[in-house]
Length: 234
Image (cartoon, rainbow, N blue to C red; front, top):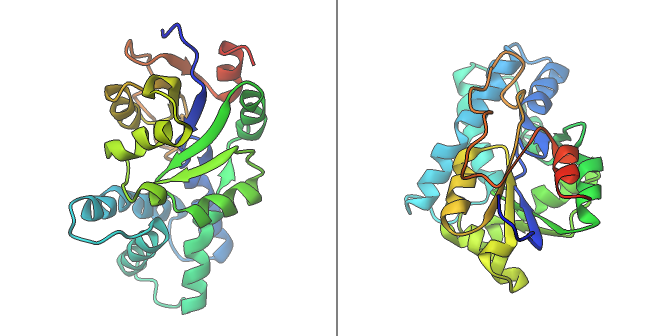
């Protein structure tokens, strides 16, 4: 475990801070779409990394997540043979990503951590999405940072190092907090500190995660944000 406390905590958002799967599944149910709501949420999220890869490879020019989410949504609607939605309804459904619900510990835990550290987002979500989400969910960020700021999606180094540059600190003075070990690995390789947050229900009620064990290279391992605040004496 690192002996030096970080100055800035940078948080992955989708899955780490907010429950994307549950929020989307609940919205699909509310809309009465004739599909398995969990399967729909999973399919939408499954298109996320491939869509970003098209931007990272240069196949697509810089495209913000809202627009990528809409491209994926159109494909998912076609896959599930849903052709009854108006354009306005599709736009509103696409903006469910702006209204994702926080995990039960998120607001309290972030508020505690904010007392001792600067807390910021480091998300592939675009700025308007993250700002609307913060307003909707009551997330107490000190600053919203996004891939949109750096025109690079995680795991490009520009995103992680961009946090350090923004605050004029060394990479080791930034800690990435995330529920995804591939994200943490990319940050770790660039010298950032890391904190893994267990989110066993991230992928829905029937999906059992098999990656919640501790890793030696991860600086902190916590069940949730309040547990991390306890470890960091907040």
